[in-house]
Structures are given as structure tokens and as C-alpha cells.
Length: 543
Image (tube, rainbow, N blue to C red):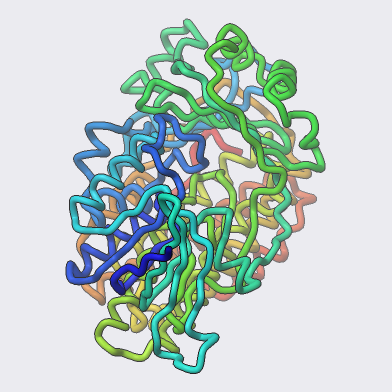
């Protein structure tokens, strides 16, 4: 016999990272909002739950800490991340003799390595503590959106099974947070493929991998303070691929291989034994470490083509998609929790507007366009770029550029709570369009440069903590800015990107005179007078 639940304001389909953080954000924004989360899993998540998204970066970490108020949990039960770190170690056992990219000390704004099992269990407990309805062991069977009925403003209806019984609940809003199951995306025909064809395999070992022990050279170890490179999101890079190493608070270590199929076929790594054989040839130090820990393997999973888009994620008809139920980019630079934070912020704003009886049509459309613009801008960092991942001459420049773009534009909008500020967006429309165009042009230029580079791999550490402007850009995220100060900040970021692009162009052209710089130079021409100081921005050991 069916059971009918009391109507609620928002039903969230899925109680993983995206769904539970949205529930907490909605409740924090308006404690009177009634939220019900339907989660398929019946039991608490195990430690080291096998999900992508263990490494957070600044936007996601700020969202968990400051927006949701989970800072105590992060500090006490997760691992503070020692930044992002790269080693050009393909085929090498002398890690102290290759180029390393990373900071020698913690930068100002913290980020964390997230054990998803520990974190999602905490989120579930916190949701219940804050008065959020959470039904675990619930399987959603039907979503009837009112847009298909004559009463356009009436409630949606969700049917689900729980405890052997059928249930229905009416809700003003339905949000799909069901991950790659994509319940609403499938129902509404919103799936949209992209041209980023990379694949990934990953597994967890029930032990930590102490990369710092891979060299006994005291000078190499002393480059970092603390001497804890293993707490970084470590990238072991080569042409067409990168390998991640992410430590988890439960004592496990996450290992992943992400690759371009045109250079590294999926069938070469789609089992643990195959992945190990692949690592033995390309990353022998990691293979040596893992080979003696085969008995500690916890799991193995893979995605043949992990990246995809979505035609629409927010609707004025009071439905939305968040997390992997909508779209997914690439695990490089760990943007997953960032896009959950951004998407949930837009959804929370739309729900708040609706509760104030405001019209949603124009705002929902603008938010959807902005979200897709952020997606497109970030996708430019990945698509067709895997060929240069093994280039010690070009990838360090790309990393600096990509983080300058990220910290200088998107992260500023999130940290200063301006994602939904349409007046600021309107005032900065020209600068933002030029930043996006310049980024696309730079990604093309870097790819062309890599085609000519000598791929020198000297034994140096490119220490980003020793680049004062870069460390200050990270710190600036914590400033308190009024509306005028924020607009000035984004214009400053635009000028900084132009200065950096000009220096990259000149250095690359000096090293490789045949390099065609016309497209990037043309993109710079409109703002060439705003390049400001001639103080070098790139590390002195870069080309």
C-alpha cells in the first residue's frame, strides 16, 4: 500500500556530496525551508568511499568551510592539502633529478584532501541535526514534473520505494543530485556529449604513499617546509596522461591514471593488473611502492569517457540538476566540488527568490548561461591539452596561467559572494569576455609551443611560494571588498592576465623564433596599453 508524505519545499534526489551540501545550504539560507533528501544507499558510507572528488581546491574548500560552516570537521577529520604538485618523472627512478612544480610552503587559503566516506557520513548527521529530512535506502521510481500538467504552478510529485513500500511526496522544487544516474537528465533528454575524450582508472590502497621517501637526498627533502609532499595532490605527468596520488584521512591512498585515448588506450589499463603493468613502464617509482602493497588493494574502477555536458541545469519550472547529475569536466585541478559549490549557490538563490514569490524566468536563464560559461571556460584548460602534460618546458607555464585565471576571476566571484550579483556581472561584461577569449587563445598557443619545445627536464623545483605576486593572488581571496572594490579587483585581474600573457608570448618566441604568435598577439592588442609594470611574473628558471 502506498504512503503519502507531507508536502515539502524541496526534494533532493540523492544524498551524496552534491545533494547533502545543497540541503545544508538551503537550510542555512532560510531555516524555514523544508528539505527532503532521498538517498539510495541504506547504510553509512565506508571510509575511502570509491568516488571521484577527493581533492578539493579553493572554491570547494571555502564552500565547505565558510558557506556551510563545516570548518571544524575539515580541520579535525580531514587532511589539509599541501597544494598541487607535479613531477616530470616518466620512466625515472631519480625523482630528485627531475623538474618539480609546487610550493615550498602552504599558501594562505587552505584546501583539503577529502575522504568521501567520512565526509558524507558527517554531512548526513549534520543534515539530520539541522532539521533536514533524510530517507536512506530510498529508490526513486518516478518524477512527475508539473510542467507536463495543466497546473503549471502546482507541485511536482516524486514516487519512491522504501522499506518494501511505495511512497509519494509532493514538492515545489525537485533537484536531481543522483550522480551519473542522471534521473532528470535522462527523463528530460538533457544529455549533451562533449569532445573531451579522456578516460580514467583509479583504485585505493590501504596505506599511505610517502612520496617524500622516494629520495634520500636531504637537500631535496628540505626544499619543502613542512617536509610533507605526500600531503599534496601529487601529479606524476607524461605525454598524454597524468597520475594522481591523493592521501585520505582514513589511512588509504587514492591512485588514479587519467589519459588521452589517442596516446594511451583504455584497454591498456582497465584492470588493476593492466594498470600496474602500465605504471611499471611509465612511473616505476610508484610501481615499486605499489607492487609490495598489492594485498592492500581496496577497490578498482574506471570510466572510459568521463566528461560530459548538459543542455540545461536550472529551470524556472522549479527543477534543477547539481553535481555529476548535470555535467562533469575533468579531475585535473579538482574542479568537481567547485562546480557543486557554484551550482548549489545558484539553486539556493532561485529557491529563495521563489519563496519570495519573485519571477524566476529571466534569472534562471541567466544563471544557466553563466554556469555553462564557467564550464566552457574551464573545459578549455583540458580539451586537446593532454599532449603537453609531459612537457617540462610548457606545462609549468600552463599551470601558472591556469591558476592565475582561476584565482583571479572565478574564485574571486565565489569568495566575494558575487556569483548572483547581476549588476557587477553587467559592469564587467567586457572584461570577462576578453578574459575568456584570452584564455582560449592562450590554451591554443601553449599547445603550439609544446610542439616546438625541447622538453628540457632539469633538476629544479619551480617554487610558486617564491613568486610574490602569485602567493598574494591566493591570499587576496580572503579580502573584504565592497561592490566598487570587487569591480576594481576583476579589472586588476584582467590586466594581470594581459601582463602574464605578454610575458609568456615573449619568452616562448625568444626560445623558439619559428613559433607563430600572431593569434595570441592579436588577442592582446586591444589591451596592450594596460600591461603595467615590466616586473617579471614567471619563475626565473622557466624558459
